[in-house]
Image (tube, rainbow, N blue to C red):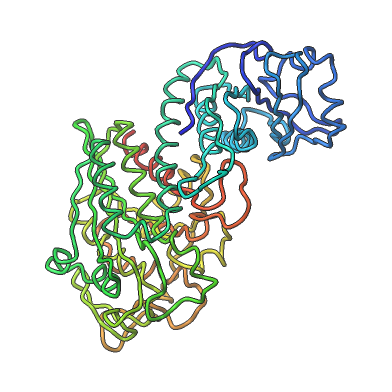
Length: 495
């Protein structure tokens, strides 16, 4: 992974690096240097604005331009990152994250780069560091021959903010966890089946200071985890349930996170169309986010107790697979009629949610690439948040926004519950109508939340995997979405 360090110099002009990143704002008169770029125009003979204007640079957010310095600066290359209109107050941390990420993506193959973006305080310094590290991510494990250009080798964030080192250290820890999740999501299912995921969680989690417990298929069946067993019974790779736990001696609150971990989702006997199947290696993104967050929480030493459940299965069609109209008994004791085997994520989650309730947490948050309806409703970049507690729902949305992860609160209309009635079991896993699928999936999950426990559900089917072009600090493929939000939730309860 790219390394990052902090430097308190206020003289970017003479800083020794291979590339210097600065910000510019848009204005009616053309791009205007942002704080951190002071003195550059003078060093370049007053030609910076004219040069950028000739290149068509407007200073819009997301723009990146490279300008040779011809010896006027210590850095031979100046990289200009658009920040949009100048704010009336402090810069939005997410604007800085995205600008830093876009710049480091554009500098792939560069040995050293320094970022002189507007890092006025510790929080914004951390935002620049985090965005830069996330933008420098690459997944080249399966490349042979001429691999794509390597990411930036070393990053330096230029900032004189007080207590900035702690913010940079946090950024490094969080970036490492997000990168871990991205790696897992990008790994093909031939190399990441449930037992293998459990092994990685056990090894990496133990190294981070987590206690790790793994239940295999026989233990799951014996303990009554009917949902996880039912989903995984059609695969040659049997299911697993991983429990990760972190405790702090001064903690007064406990949070529980539950992640959907379908290492590959064919749809089971309710087979998906081919075009919908090629990116289903990402269907374990919820479990990945929970895993990454628990690792970060432990490494940050947060004053909170946290448990995470990775509900791992591979959903495959075979002679042993569950069938539409099958009924199983969940860990909570309720029976479920399976009308569609492609609505499998909710079946593993209900077992994890019920088990998490036994830890007596202050809050349960589950995370899942649960429904295509989330993408229909909110698009590829915005997660949906539903809850049995309005204040919790709004708090999760707020934390996600603080962390730079788009999320939107959604309702749980009571009239949709009747559509989950089953003539033969306590509840059916699917509403017969296709409309409001994200909401009915959450209503189904709510039925298994232990009484008196505050619970929130995050559906991130779109945000977990970027099928389009890279943008900001987000790469193509696995994004590590919601990992940062879970860390942020834990930080709130630690506070």
